[in-house]
Each structure stands twice: as C-alpha cells, then as structure tokens.
Image (tube, rainbow, N blue to C red):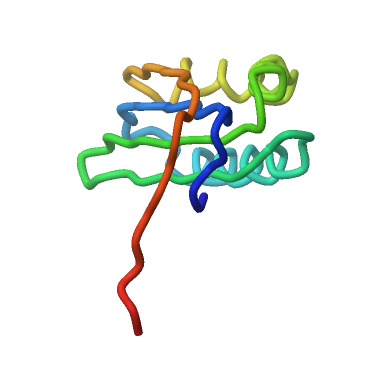
Length: 108
C-alpha cells in the first residue's frame, strides 16, 4: 500500500506460525488476499514474515465499515478458524485509523 489516505483503517495482524501445513497456509493466504482485494473499501495489503515464523500483515481499508465487513466475511471466518486450529501459535490484531502517511523512494 502506498500512503493510505487520512481516515483509512489499518488492520494490523501480528502472528506466530506453527510448522504445520505450509502449503495449505500459503494457499489460504493467497485465497484470502484475492477475496479481500475485490471487496468494497479494500485499499491494499503489506505483509512480511521472518525465518522464525513471526509475521506482520497490514490490510488497509477505506473506513471502519469496510474493515468490519471483511472481518465478518464467512470465508474469512472459516479460514480464521482453520488458522487457530492449525497454522498459528498466537496472533494479535490491532486496528488503527490513519492520521497521516508519507514515504520516500530512492531516485533511480
């Protein structure tokens, strides 16, 4: 996501992965990204995971209603339950509102 607008919602998902079912996890993550990307209010996603399985994913939403609609999506809920059962040792979710955003890119 490049510089979300003021008022956008950041859903910050911090997690620790198990070693179980890496292939299934990858497929589910791709499916969830595709599903989120076509929802009204979706602005983008940023994600990283280290070698120890600690990850952070930020999904960006136009407003609180769009973020809540994604949280309540039945397919998302099904995958969330699968994650609790198999793919995660822990996770935390932080929801924040963007006041301002800016960035810098090295000139070529």
